[in-house]
Image 1 (cartoon, rainbow, N blue to C red):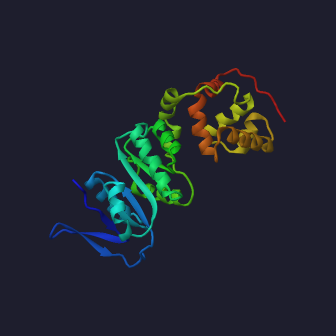
Image 2: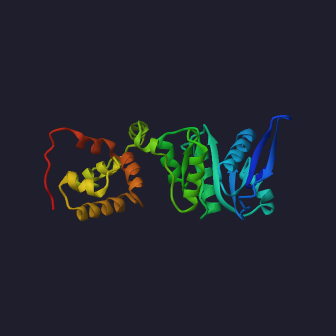
Image 3: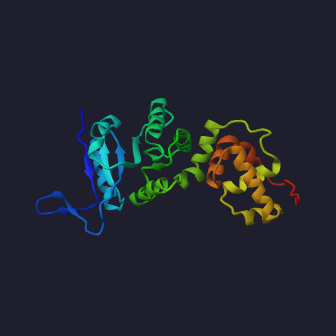
Length: 263
């Protein structure tokens, strides 16, 4: 059965208790925009609730809610240009070949506009796969709507949203065991020590102090590590390193390892 698409502009939603109906009233403080956020979700109730909540939390874009990309294509001439795509996959996994192919197809069709994935699954393995497919963000459904709005805006600004809880929490170890790849010989011992510090979110000055290095030397190590991993920022280094060699880097945590001074 075909679903009916709704367009949600910058409006405030009011609940009229007398009649028990949901009404849309114009919000004079927020002018309409000439671009839109496209929500894709086959579940009618879910996508309409999501669209309304994003409006309430200041998305700042007209929101188009469709059940599939084919439905949007039939009506795309009626709406403003799409500035970003929010694909709600629910409990389905990005590691499912059909979902991965759908994400990659959207990235190709709408590029350079970002595709952001919304999912009920908060696992690092799923996040990494989504980014591998070209997504510019992965939003677990456990976060609030305000964070969701910020994540979409970050992707529109050229950034990539990754939930910190997934990168730094217990799911890191689980995903690394599942997706671990050998990294023997790829990094020097000093680079592995720097990577371990980056995974803990430490700044260059702290890394330099703990490893008895000059800060400029740490910066050189970070640049070389980013180049080897194909990473564009420190956060990307953290989760790519976690994927590749958690066991090797974890070995550096063992007590009794000598600390050398390198200048």
